[in-house]
Image (tube, rainbow, N blue to C red; front, side):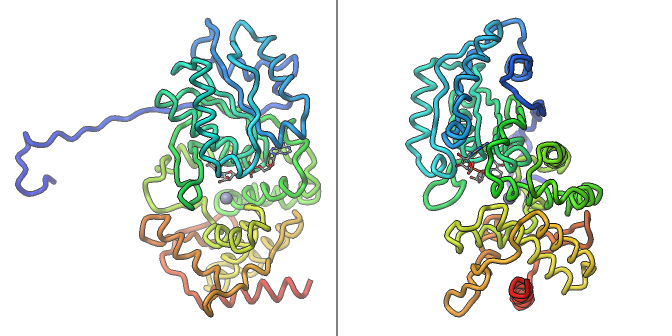
Length: 395
Ligand SMILES: NC(=O)c1ccc[n+]([C@@H]2O[C@H](COP(=O)([O-])OP(=O)(O)OC[C@H]3O[C@@H](n4cnc5c(N)ncnc54)[C@H](O)[C@@H]3O)[C@@H](O)[C@H]2O)c1
Ligand SMILES: [Zn+2]
């Protein structure tokens, strides 16, 4: 309907669609002599010409895999008919530091300009979710978006952020304050990159796989249960299966969930996250994101059970699975008070603001079944925290 006072010729309603598509390839040893996936991914639209590429490498990954930068250079040399390396791979600090320092984006932009990257050039980002976010952000504002090819190097990034459509850095005291929606040109999930990931980080990444299984895919949940022991040791084969399935569920959600650029307020993939975000901060980042998510998922599962939504045996299945994977089920940060109130409850308020005003929290009604709720009872949350604390004390 037109606003009052508007004649039809005073208003033109613009509307168009843009289609996005990108491959996500799963390989082991992307830079080995017999693997051409990455060169294909870069050149996939114009395989008849050479493509300028600029490689940025996560410093933590580069330290753990000292030969990696040289392997990348050698790979570009072997595929010189498709790839034109514009500079030696640039190494940037790994982890959240890369998103906290705005100077890094400026440095990257200077390097991109110096390498004379055009709009069809590709930035290849290799690293954890934080480096991918920061490099992706710089790439997405260069010429309003150059091509970004990601090689995620953590379980979390291979399952989740690295295959998705978002970039960001932190700023103005807020996480991910600056960022863009910018689908990548291609993603290569190389399982060999995970070989040096510390076990604790691998397990933390698995918490996100448990999460998507829990809200979307009961068969995947049962598969994780059947492979718990091997996964808790991050054995390569089951880990690769977990990453493949988890990444696929994320990709399906982006393509079929109806809201790829997150304009609405329902965020089912944020299950267990309202408290997790807060717990990371209250614990002074003692808890990894995935560890906080494990605790947050169990908290919300107990809440759902006490609300009569979830069967007790499903709650116990979740608790047993998380414990079996070596994930924490409690942290003292849960019980911390500020001004006579549990500090974690502030997370509900933050979550409401983050969603744009209306609270929407995903709760389970079974393994593989979830729905949205718009009110959360603080005293029931407190009781659920008490239950988590008692269980932790008892074990
Ligand atoms: N864009 C999105 O949609 C999205 C989604 C989820 C999370 N994220 C972001 O991802 C970030 C977390 O990413 P993360 O969990 O991948 O960790 P991370 O990027 O913070 O990396 C953790 C540490 O591991 C090191 N590292 C990376 N790969 C390694 C390897 N293979 N071997 C040894 N060390 C390695 C890094 O240098 C770093 O020190 C957060 O900033 C979060 O906001 C983004
Ligand atoms: Zn998460």
